[in-house]
Image 1 (cartoon, rainbow, N blue to C red):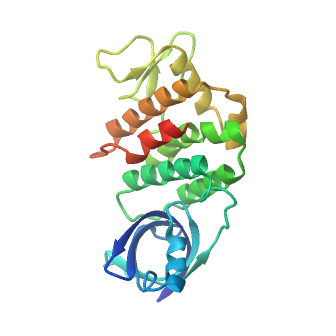
Image 2 (image 1 turned 45 degrees about the vertical axis):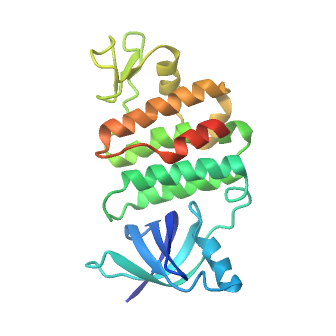
Length: 243
């Protein structure tokens, strides 16, 4: 039986001489892995492989069997034709960061339509974003994604609670005994960023690139504390260089 679903490409691996193994986040089935045959056998076929660049949003017609780890795609095409995300160095680096973070967090093939629509919306906003919004998008995505994964940060910053305990995900009155916390201006900035409800609001945050780098490192640590076997993100150092 076939199903129509949108999908965001997370990872693509070459398989054999002509095929790809593609991991995608689907609208209907959550994270799924598909074998795509015959997309690297000739110049004409190789053009089809471009559909499966990480960050691409596709329309798929797929075969789905609950008991199988590897599914198959019957038909595929663009759901979105980006203007910049796949070609602009900075925007593509941010998209690659986003999909790697998703890949590391989504361990089970469970449907999560609200998360899918959020990710789709952020990618579309990234494609049309100006320079300031683009630079702040990784911070926004990192803070908002954990809301959908069950370990959101609590925005309870106030005159008394000005230290963000990364292990608890809440602002506290004093520095904890462990080293996993944010304080000072970075804690206040995090509280302000947590209040952002749509990427367009990021235009108000004119941050120095060193501040963005520090915040991204803090947020990476937050995910490592809450996701088992999270490890290091390959795209983080690249993104920090680009930004």
